[in-house]
Length: 259
Ligand code: SF4
Ligand code: SF4
Ligand code: FES
Image 1 (cartoon, rainbow, N blue to C red):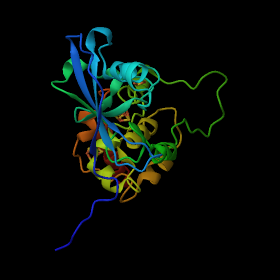
Image 2 (cartoon, rainbow, N blue to C red; image 1 turned 180 degrees about the horizontal axis):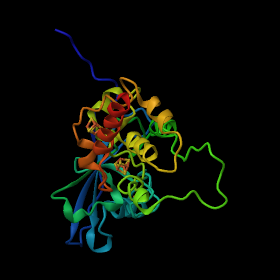
Image 3 (cartoon, protein in one colour; image 1 turned 45 degrees about the horizontal axis):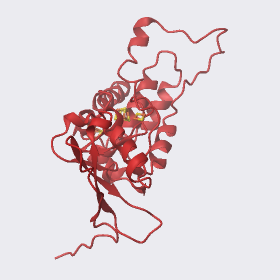
Image 4 (cartoon, rainbow, N blue to C red; image 1 turned 180 degrees about the vertical axis):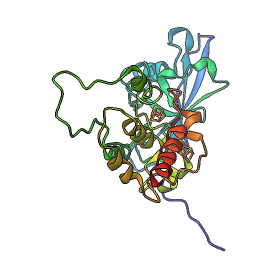
């Protein structure tokens, strides 16, 4: 029988438990993934207790409180704290989401926080998204035109503009792609739901003049067709978007243009 050995550093150990504030009653417990590339240790889960009466309601508020008041070494990305920049994506209570949109009241029991799954971790809750962004760049996320530039803006009808609703709101957080089993196993060749949703956003933009070129690029056994409609992407999107539907519309367009 084949024997599988887990890679070095794959076992997650129990880490430090930080003291609980003893004179407070409204306490929540957070268990947070820690990994530091600068020591030779395996990843660990550290335990923190926070006083909810002096903390904002979101998981990001708790992380900021921990970093400011308890453990300054805790490392995570954040910027806007209102679901716009997409940088605070992580796995909270088993779901990929944005920490700034995730209310602690909605989580029962201890709050477990991990980096986005199946990503290389740079440190603690920070995943390396270089490949994810390179895939986004590959779909040409800009208006491609051949006709001369108009004197004012490129115009579009209200109806055509409405076709972009549910697509343009993507904040490139990577929650969908890192929840997709096809992406976990084939991210080197499969574009993943985030890049494909954005590809579709530009394909159907009435002002764009590179539709055929964009579709040609995706006509490939892996880039588009590795999607098996498992729907994890749509279930997890913290912005309520539907990448699975966008992917299926792209597939439909491929069929139609073959005639
Ligand atoms: S629907 Fe497609 S892209 Fe979305 S999770 Fe499933 S396989 Fe991945
Ligand atoms: S589709 Fe949703 S989950 Fe995916 S990158 Fe965009 S905002 Fe994030
Ligand atoms: S901090 Fe910007 S999306 Fe959460």
